[in-house]
Amino acid sequence: MLVLATVGFAVNFWAWALLSPLGPRFKDILELSSFEQSLLVAVPVVVGSLGRIPVGALTDRFGGRVMFPLVSAATVVPVLYLGLSGHSSLWGLLAGGFFLGIGGTSFAVGVPFVGAWFPPERRGLAIGLFGAGMGGTAISALTTVRLVDAHGTACPFLITAGVLAAYAVLSFVLLRDAPGRAVPTEPLARRLAATARLGVTWQASALYAVTFGGYVAFSVYLPTYLKTGYGLAQADAANRMAGFVLLAVAMRPVGGWLSDRIGPARVLAASLAVVVAGAAAQAAAPPLMPAGTAAFLAMAAALGAGSGATFALVALLTPANQVGSVTGVVGAAGGLGGFVPPLLMGTLYGTYGSYALGLALLSVIAAAALAFTLTRVRKDAARATAAGAAAASG
Image (cartoon, rainbow, N blue to C red; front, side):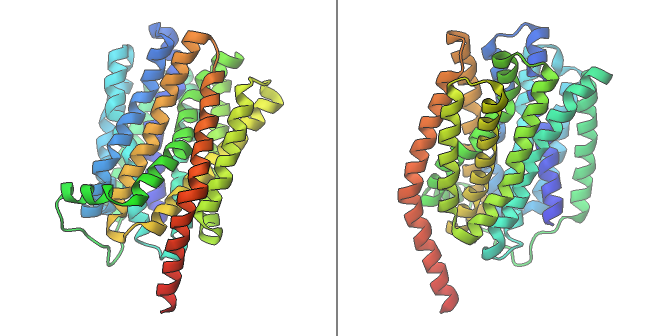
């Protein structure tokens, strides 16, 4: 079930990220401004983020057995539209990108689905392994530009639509919800209100907005940043973005595994400290080799590990029958954290001709999240760990 869910997450994220590698191309063809290009790649992010709130709550109610095939099948429609006709105008791209966001909601399906199959002491690693499915964005980065160059704009969209349709059928046949899965009986509005009253909802949301939000922001905007700031060719910039994504993906289960052993608060603190240093270093606009590359790779590893640790924190502090709802809200915060920076970076570059201020802001925000982790989050995590140990021994 873990493998099937991870594959589904990767396929849906592949679709969700299709527009990002093509952003510079669409900018040139359609003569877009920096802000319009940023908006183009950010729209699927915000829709996929906000959509996680209802999708997470629906997963609590109906289970991943129903929701994974449904989300995958629904994502086929905008992918086909973008490939066949929607790519010819800015408004067509924005409309297709809006519904492409459905693919981004798959995260809120997978976390409660996977978590229900594993005991608490293994949940951090399991959810971290599932989170590696965000590597679907690397598939997009490595293949989309090459396929467009070789076979035309429609090609990557048609291939992705076919894979999504195949997965929708496969998941409908093979997926099964965990035995004894806690199913809430209260209405959706009441469950969401109860979720809003949980402290972990807002703690994890703030941290995920920085960790996963930072990952999403770089995964959608890094090709533009490297092309504009360092003069790289589009294909080279997309390949380097893929390297960033793959390292972050590899570190996400590591963050979950470490959280199972030393606690999520410690992993989050170490990860955020690296982001503070890396963003501050990159704000000085160093040469791409070696200093700039080292800063970005360090941030990739830290953001991946921090994302895994955040959901280990969710698994530690959240009641079992509310994991989907909390995941939806936290996932939305993470996606929204990735929506704002591309728009901000595009605006700042258009105004000042430099990305330094945006990177400096990332360093400051990560420092604030680090302070929060070392105080409130560490205290609540320690209390929950002690309570769990007492319950296990008694």
